[in-house]
Image (cartoon, rainbow, N blue to C red; front, side, top):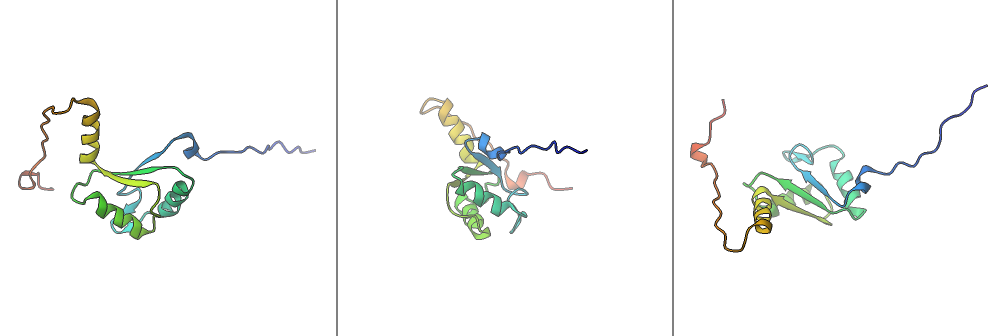
Amino acid sequence: MTRDTTTSVRVEPLITRYRGLICDLDGVVYRGADAVPRAVETLNRVTADGVPVVFATNNASRPPEDVGNHLRGLGIAPRRWSVVNSSQAAAAYLAERLVPGALVWAVRASPRHSPKPA
């Protein structure tokens, strides 16, 4: 005699444990001009469920508005998400921790002096 030992277990999606989602872009949401398989559908479902999403990019060569246009062009619905680049994230971080008027020294590599790929 065989007994059925399976039980019905309700498994909640992992996202329900969190208040929001910070999502990298290149290789996670898209690769170049093309969406990563299932990324658009998943992100649309998450935002439709009311979960806020912040897309974080370290590519400062494109303004967040351009990145947002790319995301909408891929089919990501324009709701409950924003794009933040590394410069904006750093500024927000410093603004929370420094007194107004504090001096900040921002350093970046000049394209002329960047290492050449091997």
